[in-house]
Length: 143
Image (cartoon, rainbow, N blue to C red):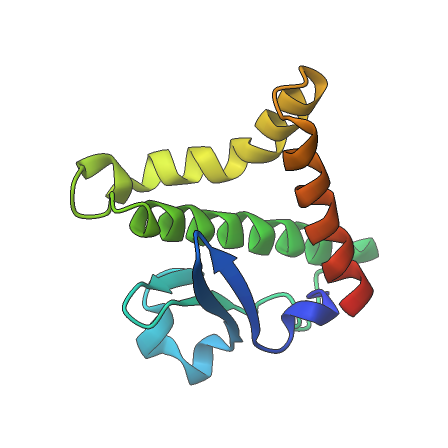
């Protein structure tokens, strides 16, 4: 299932700019989603994600397909966030790698592992860790 806090629009601060995150049904928004599960519109500061997780899947034994779709949605969401960070950093039109989908995917998919290793290696100062956990706790209290 799609996380309850992602069923309606919500806001994210990406390097000081507020992005709206919208979850859409493909059949109603093919023009926005095009041939992907997510899109980032930098002009409107909006991240669009396909809501394919709430659909009923007849071949879903023991909820495994739904879990895999939930992971795919998270991966897509991180992918679109990476694009937004590149744009807000001023890199989008400056260097080719920001539009390299393989690189953006790699960052999005490896980020949780990188974060774990960085935390294990104490590569963050105390304030960075406290800010990150405070943001995480704030989101969980709202849900």
